Image 1: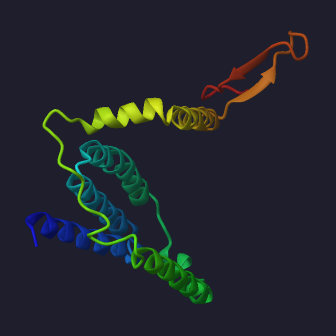
Image 2: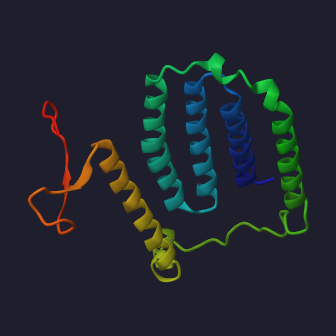
Length: 194
């Protein structure tokens, strides 16, 4: 067993244990911290696959922004844990059945002929001048440009919707304009009536 295999099994074990800790932790803050650990170890696995851009993006975006924001939201909320656990026994049989179906599906995929060390060799070594960031950018802006642009438009619509709903804006027709000719977005100012 090589040193790279040892590192892979170490990161994989920590990742699986952290993921189990996320779904079994009783405290939401502990679950969020375990999710941060899971993100860090999965970025380590990305580094083993020589995908440095994806690894640093996972750390910067998910750990640096999303998880910190989620952690602060969880810490600021007063979550009633007892009320969340009320229907556990009622839904346990359905959850157990769903877990067995998912475990069977994963076993069928992972135990098949297409998996294994022989069928999935490590990625070929690249030269020092190879940049996977450049290769990823080439793929995004050539082969997957329509999907990338569609995702950008969906995110733009979500951002505009969040801003408009947060500021409690409303769209109305001005009284002095002919009906249907001019729409105005007004943001109420604190202390003024609308």
